[in-house]
Length: 132
Image 1 (cartoon, rainbow, N blue to C red):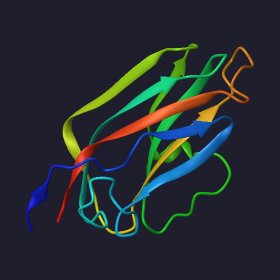
Image 2 (image 1 turned 180 degrees about the vertical axis):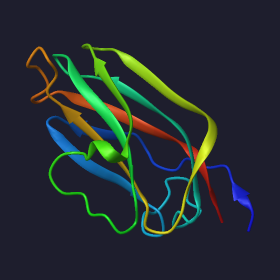
Image 3 (image 1 turned 135 degrees about the vertical axis):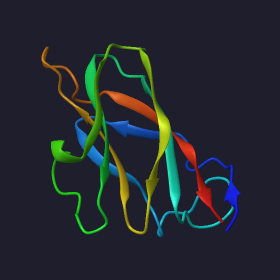
Image 4 (image 1 turned 30 degrees about the horizontal axis):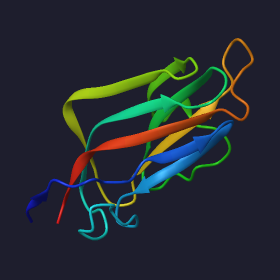
């Protein structure tokens, strides 16, 4: 199989307080029009708080046999960041994380220590590649 450099997903808008699975390998259609994401290489993510207050955002990778229930499980968390209003955060790994069949990329927006987060909107862009 060849590696296809493509946009895995379009920008995902997440409104807090919520936990959302945004990509499931073997199920999710890529935004680049190359088909369903197979083996996927997660390189990073961009988070931008478009809301009127601060919040906490997280990025998770769930195994294929685990369902997303309620809030994000800290055992699968890759990053956690407090975002001020209009703040952007770029998360990048030195080496891509390889995701196989049914593994999931999950993001969440939560209330932070100052009590903000409800109704906050965070735009998320996942960066990476997929096999075709």
